[in-house]
Image (tube, rainbow, N blue to C red; front, side, top):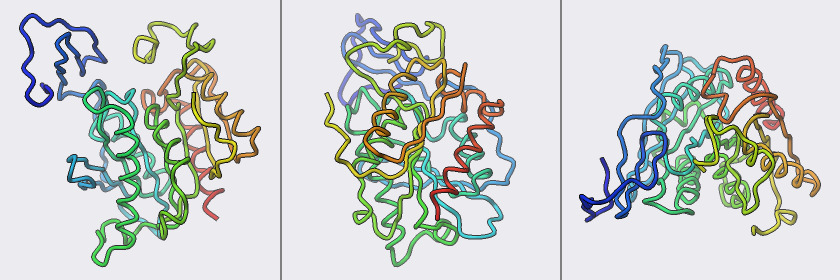
Length: 302
């Protein structure tokens, strides 16, 4: 259970919001969080991928989880995976997140970095975006350090970095694509971004939002910007499920960037719901997506 500092829940308060059984907000402003993940699945750790946790933001006690293949044959690209959860729930420690990172590290043959970030409603946006930025700046500090963490630096190629995010994490990855400049991160070289079912919203309902099934994993109960035309953007891969109520916004995002001459690729998986790649990680669609991500990394590594 978690309550904001100095806050004692009123005995007469009542629940006004609930999310996935792990977050409850009450009428007096108190917040209760469960320590249990909303995905009760086993962790598949077969020893082929090594991992450890690192503190990257002492001020907010934020950690990231590092993964690497146990027997790399050469220097490896670095692949950020920023978890989803509507900016309100989720963690690098949740088993669905950990299992996907195991697979990314193994199949991409990459160092995977999965950072936590401050969650709402205790921490309002842009706190999560700021934390994503800090997680990338941590990598730059490692690249420049006189005494870096050799667990990372012995295998990582700091010149081949890719930043991905799932749902809310995809939104964070988008903001990093807009904010980060290559000079700002030197000697770290970001080569591209992967937005997996990115969580974009708006004031007018899209067709997929209005018609989305209420019993889907993501439904409406759970959930004017400057133009990006003048912004220099690195290659971006956008992925959406055909039955995801956020699909229309992801597709529109990709179309607009393409119209403005950006290097953008949009891939839609027919019939797939929000988060299909972590909910059903061994499905045919998830396997196909992994191959697409791998191709994207290889094509943009040269």
